[in-house]
Image (tube, rainbow, N blue to C red; front, top):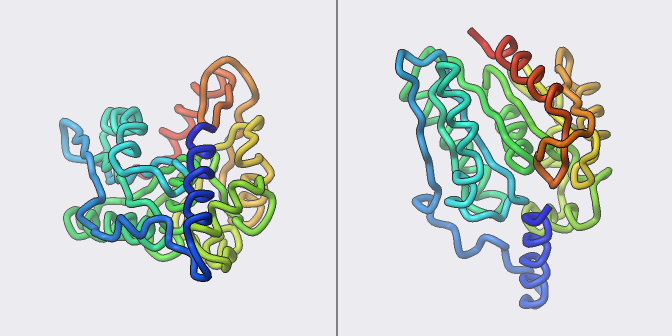
Length: 246
């Protein structure tokens, strides 16, 4: 929740400092070298490659992104996967270029291995967008906005417009569901006030064969300042393990 608020302040500052032509929120981060990657390798030959994308309303600094998702690195490493945590540059075109580049490099370096992507919030949105343009084996959006045109808080839609422009349908994977490659596991906290659970339910209905995990409320801290049920989270981890390609 704090990241969304910080992003809203950034968008406000951008809007107040521009004239007739809005400045791009990531105009200072156009160098692809500014993207960051951290890699966690399993002890044996990897079963596949897992790309990890953090949240941050598409505006978080790359180093902050990888720092916030290190637990994913450890989790997939222990499951025998090569975990690549991608700190993408802030902005729309930049962030999508970075996640696409991460896939292309992983595909070239590890031919024959399944490649999947997991992402929280805006990172989950980018994972879904990646699945519309690359043949992912699986994709796992976690409390991710999938339709940027409707059903989200006004602040988040404002950020999305500042980042991607006014054509939000183009950047809404739910509206391109027929193009999503691979098996889909949608993970969502029912009490999320930033990305409502209705987005996850609509995505499941739009993607044939997609699975949906809904977390009831509890005392385990989760993303977007939500708290979920611990037992439900443990069940999800077992379900995810069985769902991953072998």
